Each structure stands twice: as structure tokens, then as C-alpha cells.
Length: 566
Image 1: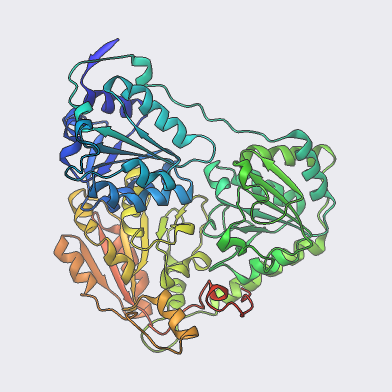
Image 2 (image 1 turned 135 degrees about the vertical axis):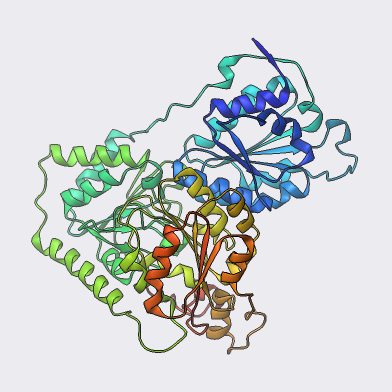
């Protein structure tokens, strides 16, 4: 046994899990833990300007590394400010451990200062919410939090440590509890179901491979690409997961669903057998209907969470297991039966879809006139976009075009809010990505509305010298909502139009470097200069406020309207 303070026990438990950074806003309810970090080089507290920014930075770190992002906040408003960041981890299945400094136990249920039922607040958006009952339990409950966060379908765990428990100055700790880590397990799936899936794919007329988020978390792009190559099947990706496979792979067609590629939708509609690997077949991927996945298609679904199998669409074969392990087992079964020779007509169809997508995107070349359309901005970016760049995009209109228009030639290089649909997330999340991957360029893409939501984190970036490039497409509007008012409410706009300060000058004032670009020819040079800078940079690009995408949930607004096909 080793004797230490409660604060030291928390910090040693974090160090035992290899935690590099703890993101948060300094608060009196966890000063004992912060003090135990003082002078340490291997773990550092990153002070942000808002708890929401801290949660998003931890989320970015988790997406970039596959390891838990850690954040720590004070009780009451500090905790409630963190809810959206925790929800982001829950919705995107990212591992996170959120530590809350709670009020002293003697003050609970007395309406004390900043008293909030933390467990009740976080329970709906966390895998588990833990209240530490005494200081002796800190080591094993911290270990439990990390194990839960990284097991099965990963997600956030909230651990509440009351203030009086942190005051314990001498607790006996078993060192083994401070370094125990979970060994990763790749569950292979039921062999009988694997054989059934392999048989369906071998005999398919036009099989289609749909790669989802599970492919990214299990780092399974090689297995997915090998399966597609063996079958001669097109690869489409689920919503927001367009980087699940290298986009320059000859079988990749595009992203499916909301803001996806029409060519990907066309490929999926031809499927007689569709294998969804690591995908829930969720809302913005399928819209829970058959606009993309034909009603007569036989669906094979591979998911780490058994409860997701057949939840959103009927499946012929549902396999609970790791995306990479199950795909590898299916591929081996197919090869053992004698690899099929993909029909040339199938290969030609995939090549034609890829060609049509390239031609469509190339046709979006800049045309005379200002302001630019977002599509034209992406056309310029594609020519100079670093293949090794890590990209973080916002929810919203202008940034949403990126799913179909940026080249993610390296897998696992995109982070987005996915089904949370959160704006204000991109820039702080990009800071977390950059801190996790300091040797790769990191680019945040957002609209003006979302960027201003967490603009205070510019100060965090400057203070910590985090060289993230922020591209802000400014249309002076809440464009996604304005689109609904345009298409369905007779252009009766209410509070959809906003104003902004000069964002490039705002970055200068914070101590970074700002660029203002309103001509297409200047975009490549601005991006190159920004990427070469040693500190944080921002490129403001005014874009057409009238270029509004057709709303994603049109059918929910007008119940008598048929769903619009991509």
C-alpha cells in the first residue's frame, strides 16, 4: 500500500491511464486535484475559457487518439456548462472521462451554493454517472470509469468527487489500481452468422459495402477495402464518416445520406445485398426509410452493440462484434470458398460513378462575381489541401458541404459533430485534435454563427500556442434555419440574419494571425500561409447568404411532402 492525499490519488490514477491533458476551467471545487498536478510534466491541466470548450477539446482529443479525453469542472454551473460536450461524446461514441468537483456531502439536499444533482443531469447523456462515496474508493472507481468509457460501444463516464472527500490527506492506495488498463478486445462475431453473411455476399448480384463509425474506431479500413476489392463492390460511407476509408480507393464512391454524394445514393439503390459495417443505419444515413437502401435489399449489419442490430432497418443477418474482426472473418470465409471473380460490368459501374462524381465537383469551378458560393470555396481548397491534414467541421450549412467536397485520402482524418448536429463545436474540438496530434496540420471549418459561439477559445489557442487553422465561411446568417424559412415559410425570415465583427481582425486582437479572402484566386495562398504559421490563424471568407441547402428534415416540417432524394 502507498499513502497519499485524495487529490494525488486522482492524479496518479489519471497518469496510470496515460492521460496527457485534462481540459477545464479552474474551479474551487477541485483545487486539491489541480494542486496535485503542480510541477508534473507528463500530465497538464489545460485551462479553457468555458466548460463547453473544455468538453469539446476533450472530445477532439478522444476522436484523434481513440483514447479517453479527460475534462474536469467545478460543481453547479461548471457541470451544467459541460453537458453538451458529454452529449457529444455520447452521440459520437467517443471515450471520455469527465470529473466533477462536487459539493461537500454535509451540504447535500440543503439547497447549498451551486448544488445541482449532477448524476441526474448527466445520466441521460453518459454511459455511467458515478458518485464517489469516500476517498478510499477513488482508485478503483477511477479505473472503473476508464474501463466503462473504453469498453463495447465507447462513450463518456462522469465521476463526481465531493469536496470534502478531496480533503482527505492520508489514504492507503493499492498501486495496482493506479495503473490497471483495459486490454482491447476485438469480438469476432458468431461463426454461423459470419458464414451466412459470406454466402449472401458471394451470391449477390450487386453487393454494396457501407462503412460506418465502427470502422474508424476499430481502425478497420484495410479489411473493409479488401472485402470491397474481393467482391468488386462499391464502398459508401455513413453520414459524417466519409473518412472511414481512403477516398482515393478505386471502390470508394462517396458518403451516403445527409450532405452526401448523389453517386453514393445511386450505388446504394442498386444493392441487392448491402453490408453495413460498424453502422447503426441511423437517421441522417438512412432517414429510417428506403430512399437509399432498397426495400428488397438483403441487409447484413455488423455492430459492436447488439441492441442496434435491426433497430432502424430490417436485417437479414445481424452480427454483434468488432467491425474489423467480423469483416476479416467474413473475408476469410469468402476466400476459403474460392475468391469470386467480380463481373466486369460491376467494376465498370463503380468506375463510372466515381468519374461522374469527379466531373460534378469539377463543374463547381469559380464563376465571376461575389460573394463566393461555399462550393466554390471547396473547389479552391481541394487543389492545395494537405493530404495529411486532420479536419474538424461544424454542423451547419456552409461547413456541411465539406462532407462531399474535401478529399480524405488518409483514413480517420475527419471529425464532426455527427448526429448531435452541434454548432460551436468545431474550433475547440480542433484544438483538442491538434494537442493530440501536434505533428499533423489541423483545420477547423465553420460558419460565422457556430464560430462565434465559442470564439473565446481563441485566447486558449494563443496562450497554449496551438497552431490550428480556422476557416470561417461568413454568410451573416443562421443559414440552416434560414433555409427552412426560405423553402417552407414564404421567406418570412425571423432572426435568421445576424452581424459579425471583422473576424480576421478579431483573431489579430486575440494575438493570432487573421486573413480576409473574398476572391477565389486568393484562397490557396491564404491556406498555405496559414498552415506555415507557428501560431493560431483564421481565414475569413464571405460567402453568398442566398446559397442555402435544401433542408435535411423537410419531411418533418411538411408531413404531406414526400422525402426528397439525394
